[in-house]
Image (cartoon, rainbow, N blue to C red; front, side, top):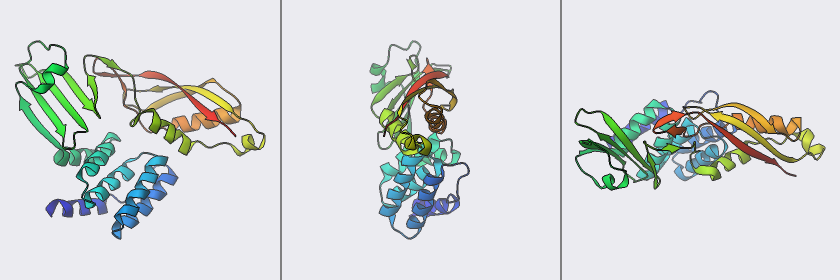
Length: 259
């Protein structure tokens, strides 16, 4: 199959170690690539999942996508290739759009009933991913100017004329999992039985990146430093939006240290 051959070539070109990624995650990725090369796809998939538990990154998502494709799981391929593109990989974005998204131009569609009245709407461009996980509808006037957009992601609606808070991919559960897997409890604090909950604030910028993390209510310098370290390592959020325009948002997060 031509597509399968294409992705084998892409796999070979993409199996290099990514710079700056979490070491534990990258070790799982490297082992997963070895398992994928030897045809042990289930083992490879498990290793890529472990890598993502520690640190979501392009290498893990991209290679997991290829593994799922070779397991004949096209939806798994599309979902993971989309996530690789979310972490700013242009090649992944191109592959996702080429193999996973259908685009249709319509005058009227079922989506019209999901949004408030859009004056002067002439037509809409509908992008639907083949597994129904996300849909994007852009509404245009007769001058081909974009009037509004509607995104449906895992059944949740986001309308460009409204405002939304920043959100972590997978929700609070996945954010808690990331922090749990990456939080380092200082040995000195463990030895001295220091525990408690640290509250910190940080900015999520227009690109979804974490900036300017600082302690709001600390417990002890050792725990405060550890909390800031794990917060600064959070890879990326969906940014907050104000009527469709990405905005900065200040977020407060608690990090619990318990013995």
